Image (cartoon, rainbow, N blue to C red; front, side, top):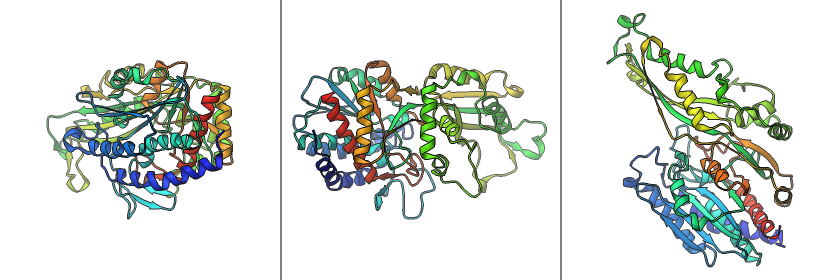
Length: 469
């Protein structure tokens, strides 16, 4: 068995000497995901990030590791490491290296591509979501080998299109099918944490339907004094269409086809988490003034963000900036819609229901156009095998001093749904470092270094126990 103190010392030292400096360099690279940078090949930022990490892997990968660089035509690249083990069993470890765009609102002295360390927090885009994963995966393997601890064969798969919904990943899973094999355990380090005090295991992920809704009413803008009262506002029509989908008072999604029955086990887990987090369920967000949450029951709020559908309007076109806004009734309004759907809801069914809802019987005969991104499926974890449940509890107690907790997450990791279908007998450990205020996708994103170190040590524990189960 591994010496836990020795594991902790190795992980802490390796992180400080070999991981933090490289993640710092990685944050400087603006390699936003392909959906946000259609010219990603010409701009070269993805290749910069790939070469940075590949060079690090060439220096630090465990002895005997085969490193594959996937470059399929017209697809973002992929890194795959085949790490030999002491059994024919296979563990698949997953992460991604593409990033969300900068976003506005970074506080003074910080920026998306400007790494800044303040104590245990390393600020900048992509460190926590999900640049650290590849480094933590390798560190966990090296920590075991440093003590001569046996582990199964490990395949580390790192993609570059996750923030775009992983459109390139299925082709690579097929291309590297032989190298991936049939894993019995899948470890994903791209999820969240309810606090920084214990290990968190993700039990479910919501899916995502992304779409742009465009409403056209005129061929060109006209004087609002002349047209208002005669020509319906494109914004009002868009608002009316969204009201078909969402109750504007409560935020509840109205069509029954977009909801599911929440399993009793997930309700019970949400209740247990609510008892631990209590007001932190709400207080972790950067509220302004007297703003309050949509409810007061922490259990229901957890279920809202993990099992119930919810809409966010994330962008718009057709509206001028305030300084350019004249008295014009605009010809069109376009809104970007982000609809989170329950973990077990079929994303194609959800897409079809949404399209029919928005386009049927258009108000005033307006021209309604809805363009969809590739729907992202949700995921609901299989029941934990007894050995894995015990292992997660042991790991959390050993390295955090508190028990592990299990909770769904509101975001999506498209790869998990794909793997759940492809490897139905596999066990899953979905975890991550995105705790309170870490703010992935938004301003002031940070990686909590101390928490990430302990999480890396917990992964060591899981890999060790998997071999000896």
